[in-house]
Amino acid sequence: MARAFHQSWKETDWPCNFYDFGTIGRPTAVARNTLVRQARGTHADRVLFIDDDQAWTPNTVRRLLDNDLDIVGAWSGARYAVRPTTEARIPACVFEERDGQMRDLQPQDGGLQEVDAIGFAMVAIKRKVFEVLEEPWFRTMRENGGECGEEISFCERARKAGFKVWVDWGLPLWHQLGGAGSYAGQLSYR
Image 1: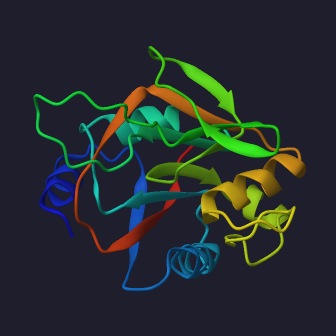
Image 2: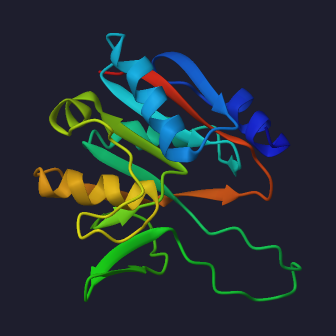
């Protein structure tokens, strides 16, 4: 687990009853499906995914959950190892679909925006989404048969089922180099 993740976790202002599950060393789609199965065995009303290569401010989780949306994520740039003096275009891991392809959106100034897909560096998903979608919830194939990340496939299927996908541009994460697994929590947040 990355040091910045551990520090962020320790300093988080957890706004609700929370129990965490973790998986390490498994393919991401398998890990996320396992975590959802574990959470569905509880009375949690949401699942919060946080990848262990992220860092965030103490109030980020509270602010994300206060949005009270079916699927909402904070935004995280892609991992780049660049010197601080080097400028680099950092994709936001937030996507819109154009011509059948997912394209990175550039970070915006604060606020919520409906999007076609988001990376799951930190995302809260209401239980009802998992109850509507067929298992396995996370797959690495798009509906059109092309390969993709498990987040893209999940977001496509959720949108097709009538759910909206949101990003909160006011909640940046810091994507760290390193990290070994996926973590999720079951949340009872009202």
